[in-house]
Length: 596
Image (cartoon, rainbow, N blue to C red; front, top):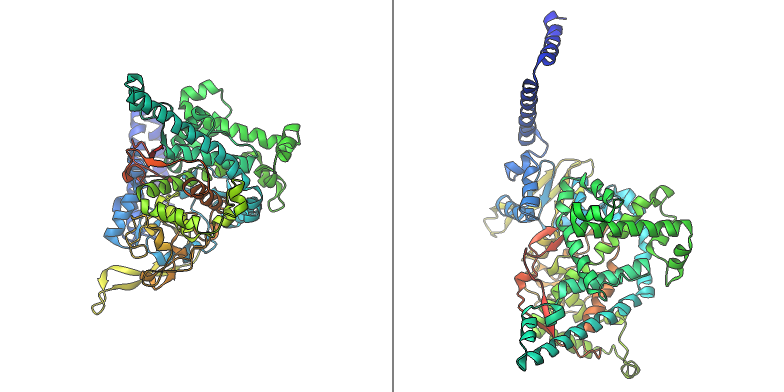
């Protein structure tokens, strides 16, 4: 061996020992620059995805996505859409990820048993929950433990919780109605205090209801009683209910931070064991409430696991909790029944079962009140549907949700609400298997000279590549849903040339569209996810949506409540920011209504 070859490293080591702190800092900076240049060069020219189109900056570094996720909060989806317009249906949106945008690709991607992409799923903030599980086989076991609790049979058995909590909800609406009527009368008599109260445009003084928050509180009460046997009582306790909504919106607004900086999840877990005053000082009241929720769930799991009196009381209060179901499940081993894992399933149920349902109900509320034609038809079809017997009318009873599902127009209203509200907007990531995949997509440049239609080309994707697709691009695809931004339930009832079909199945969705040759629209709805990993709580969500829409806006109840939009436009509710769920523009006052 050449002596110089041996001597050089020794000389370098000696020089480093003799170097000053400033010189060492310069060496480290130079080393980092060389590494960064090498990494960027590899990603742009030698990476397996180097030949896919997209922004060079996005291909070179994750900082591009970070900017649009955090600095321009939750707006990367817009940049992705722009890239599709410019580069076509298959683009590179980060150093390691491709994004696809064509309706024909949903089935082959999401019906396969593919793993999730760990980076993409970090934003949920629950890495050990079933919904945040990366490996498909592990997810399958965890899902099997949850499925019986949310089966249609279980929802039918315990679905009374929707009606129980609706009674409290209606009482709050009536109070708002009476308060507003009283204030208006006082103002008409010249009472200046009443006039000032009406100008506040809030619930307590003016009887103005922000339905997004109110629906959220009701959804939490329903899912908490269903999953944990006791309602959190947010509708009854207005102050606590508003604190909860503020807390969850705060947590969801920070979801993109978790994606890019997953170590923040560890800090969140530490907050659960710190004194309340310290947590509130360091991270605010929102994080304090989130930490208390985590701590309460842990306490409940321990009580159930150890068979304490509190645990037995929970079990026999009305029905077993979701924690009973998980701890006693034979589908998962004991290693999967750890407290620090199971509480995350509990929290995912609360978040997934509240914010998403509330989002759909908020959009349905706005569109029913904004389009009297739709509301009138809904009431007429519910009235003529034969869902009320003479005995039920005499006893002032209401139809069960299983019966309401048979109303085609109600089902269409619910499904159209699911489409336009985008309850979950985060792009859906999957990792392709360890083999090349070939997909056929339309070319965004070349067209057939005879027909004028885009030419079809093959796209070969390397093994193990993370790919993703976005529900909002599917739901607002004009080739599938003509006038996609218009709320039109009839689209789910159309069958060839606009003729009414035989209705909509509330779960599978069998509406058709002549524009796609009369094919079913079911494959173009991704509100509950898509394919193998579709949402486990879908049955409960449908029960809530059908019941609440029908009983609040239909002809059944004797609540004598008439709703009217209050200074609300579509821009106040439309999806603007990707916070895992679709969030409206910053500063909006939401969907406000008054009750008359």
